Image 1 (tube, rainbow over the protein chains, first blue to last red):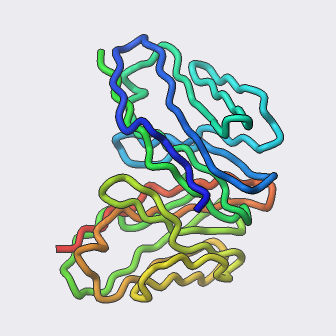
Image 2: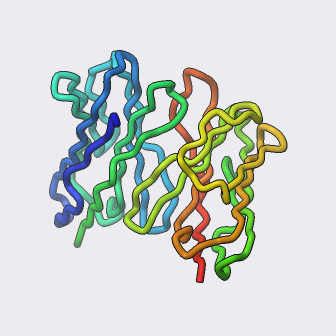
Length: 114
Length: 113
């Protein structure tokens, strides 16, 4: 199976620390999409970013940044100056071969304390 | 204005009962999904419909039957509920071929007692 691996099950940081969530994926496809979703304690799934396999440019959105490296099949997510409101489970995902569904990693639970 | 809405948000029921979860999206998307999130937070695709046609049916017991009356609705009916069916069920939708991200409903927490 072409899976998505988030090796960090839980991470705890103190406010204002930077934190990086790792994501490694497997694929035999040349075209695919990668995603990050956030699941706060309230339970909903919030879309954060999509990246296609042809675009290796890093992306920054406020305190969030993403580093996509095809050479290592990684799509890591960094939160700069973390805040308590960043506490959530973060899921990395990739599109399946047909592009019709998402394959999720097992998630990383991030706890930010004040 | 909710984009993908599921009802109910919470559902507690006894083993052996039959229950349904409803999902509606007002985004005009062609594709809708059901995902299951287990107690360890693992999310897995169950079903996918495109314009009312089933296109993905993962290894799910046939007690689970999705129904899509129109492309804005995808309901999930579960027969003879078992304890192991307890989970959070998420409905999602996706636009056209170039829109690969899925937008999720708020989830339905099903507890079978």
